[in-house]
Length: 227
Image 1 (cartoon, rainbow, N blue to C red):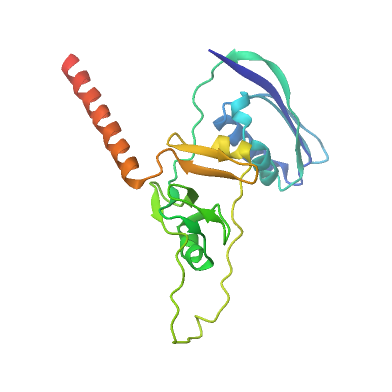
Image 2: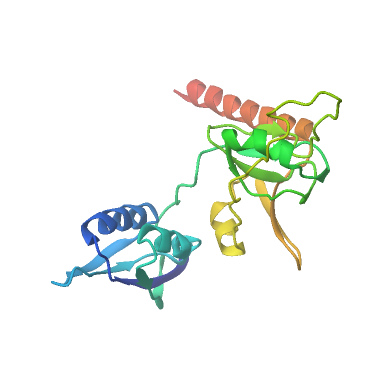
C-alpha cells in the first residue's frame, strides 16, 4: 500500500525561532514527518524542510500559524508515492455529546465550558448524538446544551449578570477530517460542517462498546489457549 508523500518546506520569520522550532519539529515528528534540512539565518529566521505523508498535513496549516504566532509561512509540493509510514496518533480526549435536539442556550453552554472546549455557539441547532465540544478528560460525556434557565420571581445579583462565553472552536472540513475519531462521522451541508457519533443514540453506542469489549476478551482467550 502506498500513499502520496509531499515535500513540506517550512519557511518562517521567527522572532524567537529557538522556541518555535522545537514545537514545530515535535509536531511534525508526531505526524510522521522526516526532517531533510534545517537552515538558520543571522536575522533570526529559520527554514525547515520535511518529507511528510499527505494525511499528516491535514489540519496542520492553522496549527502551524498558531505555533508561530502568525509569523511563519508554509509551502507544499508533491514529491512521490511511498509506503504507508504507520498510524498517526489522534487526540485521546473524550467528546461532549448532545443528548437532546433543539437550539443551544447561553445558560447551558456556560455550564459546559468548564468541562472542555465548545464547538457550537448559542442558538445553534443541535441533535442527539452530535458532538458539541471536546472534553478535557478521557471518555465521552452526555450533555444537554439546550437546557433553558428556569424563570421565577426571585431576583438576585448573580441572576441579573451578563454571561460571557469563550468563542467556540469552529473547525474547517480539513481540520474535521484530521480530528475525527473512529466512532465519529462528519456531516457536511451547504451551510455547516458538523461532527457526530456514528451511532446517534446513547444506548446504541453502549451496545457497540460492549460488543467490541467481548470480541477483544474472546481474542485474548484464544491467544491464551494457543500458548
